[in-house]
Length: 541
Image 1 (cartoon, one colour):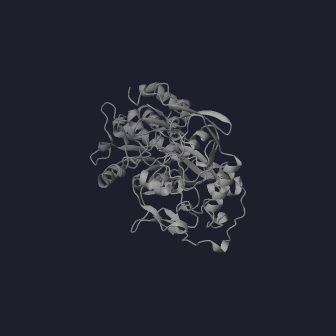
Image 2: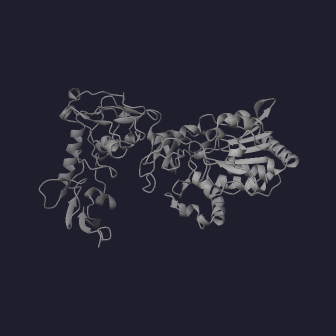
Image 3: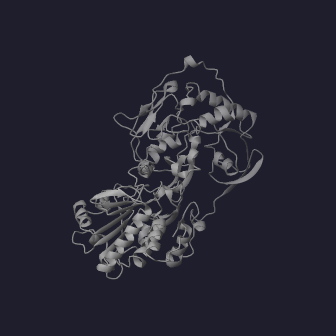
């Protein structure tokens, strides 16, 4: 029998009087965590190699004369462990005081305050408010040093847990930092001539247990206890990394005033573990950049602000004019791999039933750098979803390439959530769009193609809608609304429904969950799928 097929050996042990079983090879720290017992630690991280250097996790094991580090001691049959004995607690207190010998009293001004492990144990758990080491004797080290495009380092706060070093070597695969000097003068530093600028560098801020590494982007913007986090999916590429969208809690009641302060990785072993690339992490900025906040209509060559009623009435008249004079073959519809499945599904239905056109396709958007870890070359989150929904030309219809060609036969074009110049040659796209009698762009942000638009409709961003994305592996994942759309902006599904009803179609307003059930009923691959089954980790199809 191969080793793979052999049953994993299970060990029986006791921790703090609780009997449990753990797989052979499990360290005491993880075994204790499995039954709700937390052992203090700084250097240990479940996704990194074990260093055992902070010595905060020392525990007492019956039969052994000295305390043992729980992070690197594997469980044994019959082992009796005490994490809260007086001997273990004294050792943890002493080690904590040792780690703080040269630590500055920075808590009131430290960006990590409120989510700092050192602060939690020192102040909250052990109540060690006094040190036996005089303040004037502390060793001074560099503070607020930019060691990369996204990272600021404070050497005085560092406790040399080496998590950041191990991350760069083992996860980012770019060893850019190490330690210099010895003993009391040891210090984290970048290698000569290098910066901490790998594509995953901001993860070092997440895993730093203290305030030694901070993010330039988030630094001093808001205290973490003022943030409210909503789970979602990163819109930065086709990998579909799980994230938390962090907004100011003060405005959670009035979500239209909310602002995104940061994205943080949400653990999902099937997608991104607990990591997130820097590009995806900073993609939240599109929520506020160049937002379209009100409908626009072009009059006398200029875009002017109008009401939704006026914009929808204009669409109704001009679309009907094209359909009457030229027929549905002369109007096109372009969906987007940036939009949710629910929005794309409704857009497909809108093109077929309302516009009555076979000229339907989706724009794939930008491509760029990819690697063999989390970053995909496809820089949109839902290409797989658009493909699975069969967003493409019907019988006798034309695709995106022909629609955006200067020789296209179209008189009107409706674009939802996409920018054509990201997919096709700028010059040709501009010539094609300039020739149209009617160009409707449904978008959250002003784009290059808006210069040719006759009507612009403000839509919501990924952070302002509920729905689903499907990553490049075919995993369906939930997108949760973290905030209300900006004033006058609407979800794509709502916009399409309003226009359809204005044009005389009996379209009921459906929630994203109801639209997903419609998708599941029509697409065999997703039969029986609903939001409950998708859950918070997604589901592989």
